[in-house]
Image (cartoon, rainbow, N blue to C red; front, side, top):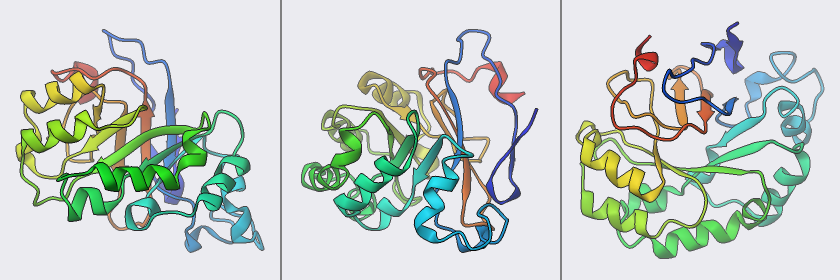
Length: 227
């Protein structure tokens, strides 16, 4: 059956690859702090914002933390995310824009270190999912910069969302695969790679539905993805 997402978005049922068994599928949204979810849209009437994450986690088992892209979170806030959510809940956390958009992957070590210092309570927990590296649309392919960033990745899962079409090339896929990273697929059907994270977004809404799986990356589009 279709899966009802936040904001009225309906995600198609998970499809199985004929070549690889999908072990985990998660459906969630890019955040939980949305005022228009009040009063029965998602949150019950008079549900205070401090309880929104708890209520959200009763309906979804994952969330993309988009706010970390704009500003580094407080460690105590991150610790509260961990405490508030049930066992098995997974956070996908977006890398700071200082690293991806301002520095544009140049000399990322210091920025990545500061980012991980702030999300340390999540890193120490079993609830940290993939870290999302989203690059700007005017950032053209640069294999050397990408390779340098991949070499510095902290332990864990990482996925890259490229906005410029020049990145969608077999050589880039191989760099990601060699580093154990995945390619995020936006809602443009021309952007493909078999990856564990897919972001299905509706630009007229502030929230995104997302499907995250643990299937390994591949270098050619399987038939099930285009069905």
